[in-house]
Image 1 (tube, rainbow, N blue to C red):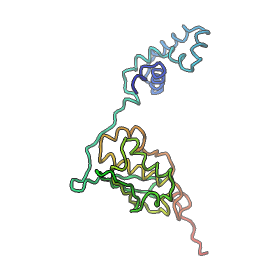
Image 2: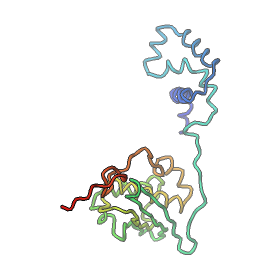
Image 3: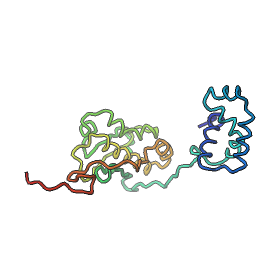
Image 4: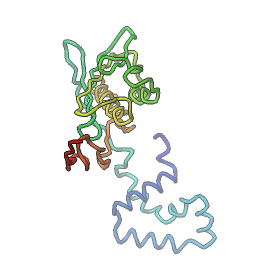
Length: 228
């Protein structure tokens, strides 16, 4: 983040964040009230023009108190040992989405000739994704975030899901992207830092699974049998 952490706007945002985590005590609240009462109406209107300076005027003492604590941008990223097969140089990553419907395994290996390619079930991405360029870009996104050239690697995506009539959709591509990102981190552990920061290794668990074939409600109630 560089010098952005030294700006008044960042200090204000960090103070509000720590305040929401209830890091204050009674003395902090008393000082905040004093800072607010010392401000004239004209000063309050002037500081409110940029929508944050009036918060900084009230929280400046609290901001100095919590300045040294860990914040969201200071949280470190775990770096694991490389998990590469010594004989073949292959690393494996897994990704899934929508429960058990879309599950992929990415097999990656370094290609020192610079002629690497990404395939899905043995087919080129153009053929497997019905020539949808935005889905291909989504799968190649981990290489861009890690500042790597996908031509330096051979990647094959293998489907392991239970219901995949087609791979050319955003949900399946999300699972492919996660599998590729995990495989890259197993091969090159330092790439976990940009990939984790960009959210390519995370899943939103609040997302509800989609409709599963043969069931009425997710995967709980089966459809009633009808002969015709």
